[in-house]
Image (cartoon, rainbow, N blue to C red; front, side, top):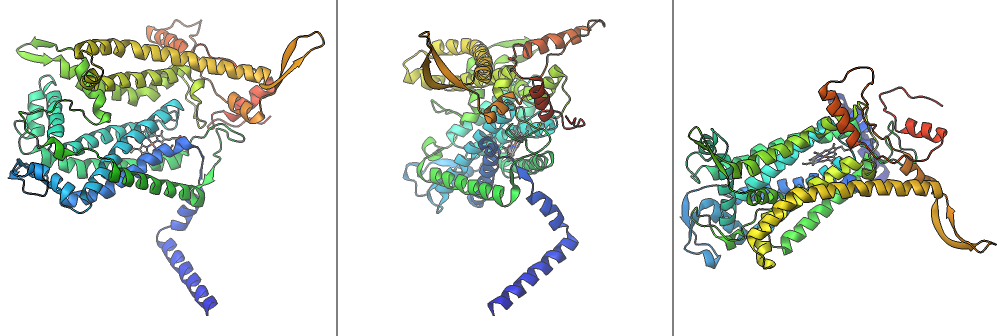
Amino acid sequence: MKKRLERKVGAAAEQTAVALDRRIPLMKAGKELLRKAFPDHWSFLLGELALYSFVVLLITGVFLTFFFHPGAAKTVYHGSYLPLRGVRMSEAYKSTVDISFDIRGGLLIRQVHHWAALLFLASISIHLLRIFFTGAFRRPREINWMIGVTLFLLALLEGFAGYSLPDDLLSGTGLRTAQGFILSVPLVGTYLSFFVFGGMFPGTEIIPRLYVTHILLIPGLLAALISAHLGLVVYLKHTQWAGRGATGRNVLGKPLFPQYTGKSVGLFFAVFGVLALMGGIAQINPIFEYGPYRADQVSTDAQPDWYMGFLEGALRLMPGAETRVWGHTVSWNPLLPAVVLPMLFFLALYAYPVFERWLTGDLGEHHLADRPRNQPARTALGAAAITWYLVLLADGGQDVLAYVFHLSVNDLNWFMRVCFFVLPAVAFWITRRACLALQAHERELLEEGTETGFISQSVEGGYGEAHQPLPSEKAYVVMARRLPQPLKLSPDAPASRRRRLRATLSAWYFRDLVEMPSTPVQRRKVAALTADPTQPEHQD
Ligand code: HEM
């Protein structure tokens, strides 16, 4: 009886699969996709962390849309949160307080949503750094890098739009600051502000507009771009770390199904679990404590969420300055730190792969991840950018820092202005030296082997320590690297100024590389395993 049932179920499943495959070629596509190999490394989970926090954002966001009203019309609060009873507020603010106190599970979901947003941005940022430091943006992944930068930009805007929706005193202050940025755009600033806010600030239009942007426009773009991003990861294959058997021509790893899928699904539940726990026990954005937004009020120590902190810091760092030109006022303070600086930052991010290719003249494909130490200038540039970001972030809270450490806000601001210029340069120099020192140390290990800890005394009375050769696995990792060579000018042809600049920059960028000791045979092997896969393979 049991056997007959099993046979029937088996046959039905087969028939369904064949029928489906005739209409949509699932089996063929599925077979290839499911057996696709994914290399294994903890840092490759960062992208997935971003993906799963986005899923949690979607799930919790849908719940919130059932109860949130994006209205600017004024109403009087009569809900169950006593301190606000009788207070006039917008519908948007009232519905957020209602979600927090009168909708079952509402506060939990609001908090999970906010924590997920912070995790989303944190994992995107760290994922971006991983891609940058390992050179995973190089050919053929430049377009995926640019999609990634767009995702990062959209995620920042999405966070800001969501944060502004409750119309509380803190987020309203942020919105007012944003309006200042818009106004500072020369010539068109005032028109732009009227266009965005539908009239004077704050007006009644901005919250409904931000709502549509937050729940439809940006999530739609994010979902479409994430799909394209992941499609390209599968199509171009994932980069991998050098290790036994891994070359620029193959991918070593676990198949997508069942191993990789199992791990990934596990990560999803872990992310959901941790976020649910944080939403349950860690208070975040208690808008009911801030009160509703009023344009004539501002709370002291108002801080944006951390990912917007760099903008706040840049604003506070920049001295106030204005210029009158043809009857127009150019207000340098919001314009430079809040409009020009972020534009330059994103431009630099978009352009970096092209810039590095221009410096190396290297048009080959790269599928082996760089060890950061093997690219001292790139790693140092990344460290300088992180330091610069941290200085801005710290200055975004200079009032709080001054209060806690009993300092003068003005002195602290001046100190931060010096740090803004000096610290990134110091970070660059230290990181570059550290990378070179690490390379030199590995060269020493290759030449002399590792220390065994055994001290022996010779017949002459001298002491010596026994060394053993570096294990082959480690030696392989150290030696498997394709180092960019500085561009050289041809001595025969006269070089244009542009070519001379390019050669000088290239020489500066790639100078001081530590050569690893190797025999001609080893050199040939390393060249073969790191070779550009688009070029024909040479057999020894
Ligand atoms: C919504 C945001 C994002 C999501 C959900 C996402 C997701 C992923 C996932 C799941 C992977 C494969 C696993 C991994 O390498 O971590 C990946 C790879 C990649 N991502 Fe992202 N990512 C996002 C943002 C970014 C950003 C901001 C950048 C860079 C600017 C970027 C550039 C790349 C590149 C170049 C790869 C290929 C890596 C390789 O082959 O080694 N992504 N992304």
